[in-house]
Figure 1: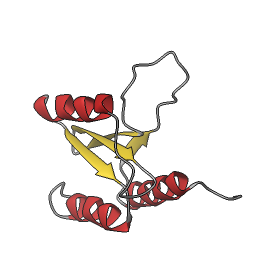
Figure 2: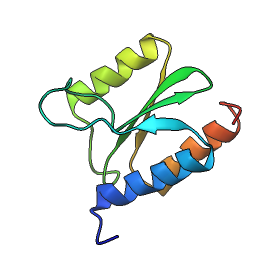
Figure 3: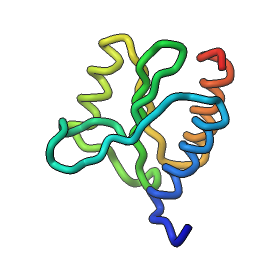
Figure 4: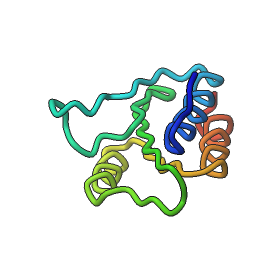
Length: 102
């Protein structure tokens, strides 16, 4: 698979968790034609919208636009996760097992 960036490794872990729970998801491309601030993963979990923003590690912060988008998702009734490390991946997995009813 070649070498992955640190953020790529986090995204791979998130993808593995989503696939294990049979969650529908996609990764919107950032090609200049979409809306800025969209999370790395866009998912449907039990009929609800979930956005997941990935960062390489705990020292990396989401942009102000990414945080604002996450807040808008939550205000609209969705869920937004910031995933930066194995502990965050584990929290996502726990939510999918317990709270989301997968």
